[in-house]
Length: 311
Ligand SMILES: Nc1ncnc2c1ncn2[C@@H]1O[C@H](COP(=O)(O)OP(=O)(O)OP(=O)(O)O)[C@@H](O)[C@H]1O
Ligand SMILES: [Mg+2]
Image (cartoon, rainbow, N blue to C red; front, side, top):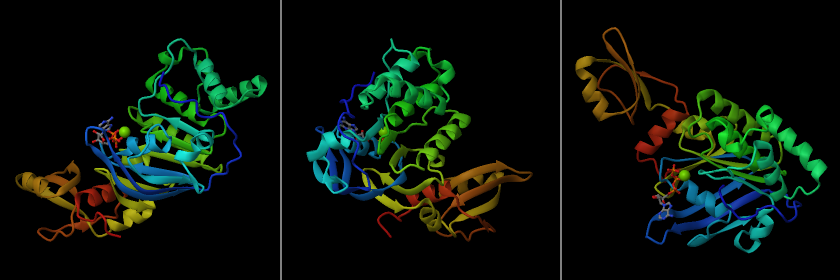
């Protein structure tokens, strides 16, 4: 079981409008600067936090759920200082940590019932029906009596998200929830979360997998080496790569040179060599067609080029 403080006891009358992060810096005791002067506003809906390994995503999430105090900077939730209102904010939080584990002894149903109690659902009749409804929603009702630690990887993730969602939280923070999931589970998971955004709540989803940031994310941020390098909608990020994604036919002899010189997105074998997609500021050295960028193209283009800190 992952131990985190008992979050959800207080009232739920806080209506979340936004989270404002100002000049946030986190330096670990060993000197690692995991977050560098982050300024960010997060509003209702699904917010995608994207970045490579070590970018600082989990650090930011631990600070947001008040498990860690930042070295510098301030976070407000609806104008309330997070550090000074920890109990109030925790009472409306659901959190799925990156390294989530379960009590070995509990069944799936018992575990979710336990989580529901922590989230403040005291009335046992109401709790029973909410636990059953949530198990249905995440597709675990049929395995409700199975020990939680005997579930498959995908099912464990779904139980993890269920414990974060139970008790009507207003802010849900999920850290790399799709790691290790197969494509079917990943789609299922995305659908589950996007259904949630119909409610008035903030969902913050961190990932290093670009395709997890679906069109359901109305807003996103890109973290790289502790710095916020982009904040905006996925479409705005995609727009930055327009005119910079090229498709070319490359012979076997040219393959290595092109591969070394450019950021290659994909290679498909063709009759005479390879069809390659690359991202580049410009490309004139051989015939190429422009490709309409997608989010993955944009991510590579943005991370590999000197677009950082530009608007
Ligand atoms: N407890 C710690 N002490 C010292 N440095 C740490 C600690 N936790 C994380 N770091 C460092 O801080 C930086 C950010 O780590 P963090 O775990 O927040 O990144 P992340 O974006 O979540 O990465 P991942 O995608 O691998 O989960 C990394 O350089 C990491 O090594
Ligand atoms: Mg992480």
